[in-house]
Image 1 (cartoon, rainbow, N blue to C red):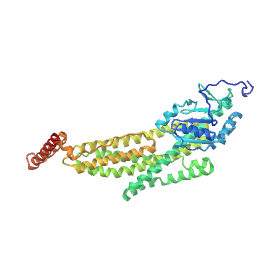
Image 2 (image 1 turned 45 degrees about the vertical axis):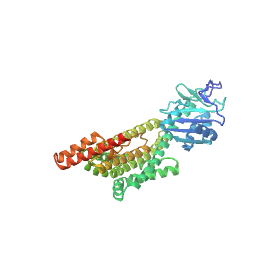
Image 3 (image 1 turned 90 degrees about the vertical axis):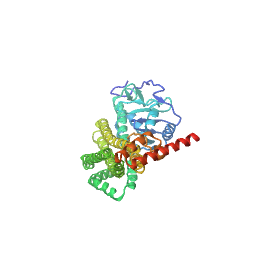
Image 4 (image 1 turned 90 degrees about the horizontal axis):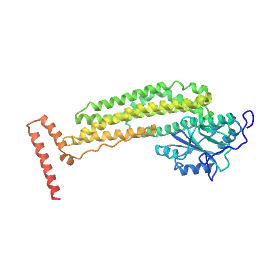
Length: 433
């Protein structure tokens, strides 16, 4: 062992699990559970991603963020410069692909949530070593070890930004799709609410533009946006309350006619508030991208904690949005189920309620996807009138409603006679078949 923290000349043991031999060269794989970054020789990067079935979904990864690591020791500088000289790709992981990647032998690091593997040519292992406690470098040089750990911390921060940029782009597509559905009145309603965020939007856009041109977020640029989250949160809260009010409105209606009217109104209103929520979520993500850059530059030691805190905050917002939107769909589905039991007397209106419920359900599912919310829903089916005639429950509910209106009147008699004749005819047809 050399003095003063110099590198040991003695070779360190390794195992096949710590270094994977590949034909096309070295590559480094880092995952934070939501995304996957692969860096190294271009052929090796492509080979790994194609084997994992992720090549088509991957995008180019800017490796300039590795440059600050060049100050950490000679070996770490060599590794970082070699990786930076090659190529990098990043891909957003789905639930299934995340599990597949997990099965590829990635190992834990000291950076929370981050796993990795280094693959290279057999025998060329002097630069990297996986230890039981996480990532390490050859020998026990603390300077080099610090550099390697900084690599993972920086990677986690950059990947968190990439995940948010991915969501920002998907939300932009969602907003375009919603805008096409809104009529002029509801589009004006939506725009009136978002007008309160015009100043916030302008400031964020300006800071993002500065970041793109300079490659970092200066103190001046950050000062323009650091206190804007509260304005976005206020609009979000108003949108969530509006959706809750729509759900309550549907719940209070019992008559099919009233439900049909309210359901039709809810469809348009839901699109308005989903659009507002999506735009607010997008602005939050844009601020987070800037915030991570600022912390990486001004206080890199705080990056891990800040990244995790931002993720927790985003998860909390997702939870509130999920609770409200899923609750809305559940109430509308329940109303549709009740309406569908009244097909015999209210066939058209019942169908309107069911169709409205399914429309809102589809809109909410489409809204959830770009926000990273996993949800499922089974569409409500509408009973045909002929099938309703053969349903004892449908007949009972219809007879009860007619009986209330005219217990012994001609309407009740006529309805009962027609219903039983239809049922008897159906039975006769089935027996003759």
